[in-house]
Length: 184
Length: 184
DNA sequence: CCTTTATGGTATCGACTCGATACTGTTAGG
DNA sequence: CCTAACAGTATCGAGTCGATACCATAAAGG
Image (cartoon, rainbow over all chains, first blue to last red; front, side):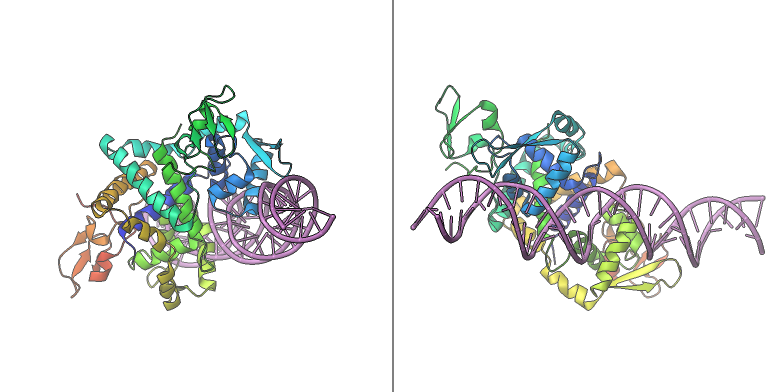
């Protein structure tokens, strides 16, 4: 028998899922849009999105086609590797995120007592870490919390990634990254 | 911009959703199965399930057809109202719940520090209440916590429902009910 | 009574999700 | 070079989902 906490989380997931049928988009399409708004330039690719969503690449490919049809996402060929594709939100895509149905969840979180919110977030993070570890998923944490993040200035840029050997802007460093691994 | 807590909940919902593609069932089918295992006899109907899931009745009808085809759920005509249908898990359905993919989530919750688990559950409950209130959804709480629950013995049964005017067994009283409203 | 009206469910449509499988380019390694 | 490995796309079948239309049965009001 499952605990009441598991049942609560299940039902909360359902509520979030149901909310995500708004503005003509589907839940997965909203998640892709949110991801692209938060991911740094190394991570805005179909492959990284596939890892984030934990789906098969075929499905993600279709989802991206749907978003492209709707004019919310743009594809560009990558400069260095001609196999890979770079993704970017269009201004229409960015604008649509103002109507994110997750705003409703946000409001409910804000309604919790202030001290609880921080505690709740910390517990969620622990739960999340455990879940991800259990299935070998990537964390997709913020670039600047990564063990490959270097504060050294390089090529005039404020930061540097020792994994990709690329200069990092401040905004790069605050976005999430597919390669992120927590610092020791 | 959304808070990190909202993003965590979104991703957790996705993990739970992805897990729910196991044993040949779909997420919604698992949720229906779980519901039927937890709902008392007044609440095991397509209509109540529709309210629980927050979907349209057409979709729920199809989901139930799929579960019936798989031999996990049985339909019976209701005794009093010939429009309505009563649902029950078959033994195959009950047996399948032992492989509930939510067991993975359960394990991760159990991995949290003992003191945190209780606190986490309480916060989740508050969040849930707020979300449900925001959209006018039903609570689906345990029968015995309802304002219509009466401890009086009646017709030899240990409890009684003053809304439906029906005797309640102990197991009835511990299951969730579509009509449940928190006691004052 | 008998006619509205409400209610519980089903049927069908179109867009989409999803895993599975098979496929096309492109890059990297012996 | 040639053979993996890799990034993506194409297609299929089952199912989800909202929307709409529909069929029974029940309840309410003259």
